[in-house]
Image (cartoon, rainbow, N blue to C red; front, side, top):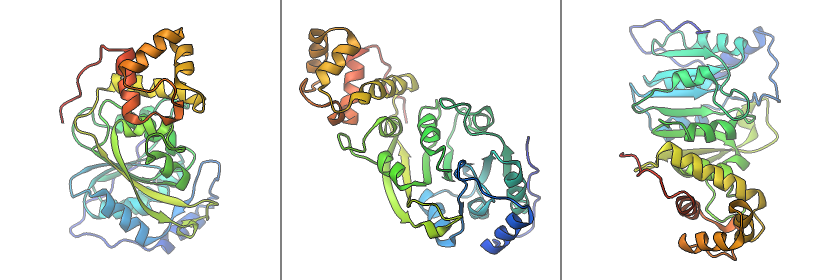
Length: 304
């Protein structure tokens, strides 16, 4: 289902204050779902910071996952980007559509960002261009932030940049240094495609209803050169499998993976990794090297 596009206007409209979004929410009789992570951004300064951090410009293709009422969406549309939003709740999609009505290059699509736990939903996939630059900018619902980012990072055409507001704990994992306690499968999946950095922290008071956790803005720039999709998937899957036993010795865990200890030690030495190190101490570069050693037929990085 496609919500109606905004109509063209002769001059840029003014952005409505949060009170108008709150009134629309109350009029619809909508009660946010904590299970779906529906905590609506209400802070103007945070919304502006997200847009500035994203660095998007008029005419840029932007995807927003989980626009909710459209508060951040209006800030994005206001600068003239070509904005596609995907929202799972039909009532919220209708409200966001009304607030985006003055912007001809903004639309809200009704659909689920995920299909199950391990695939992006067809409505979201239809919004990602097969080629060319695009950007992900969103206040991601807490319940789907990790899976959505990991899957988008593994897409054949990942975004040129991402600027997302996520739960603080997720932000720490996204930006974790290799070998740290927070560095895990999500870190590997996302950092294979993006150079990540943490931005400003955001308190619960910036949302309605107030979440029980802190949030943080994170930004990622697409790596250049970028490893081919199949190589990224193989590295991600290897790391995810072995990191289930992150506190154990690497040679022992890899031996179970490849079949015997001698073969495991040979692979580790060829990859320049200490067989006696803990699995959790392997860096992103270590996972790349080990995956290449285990499966040497990997394509060269994609050109920038």
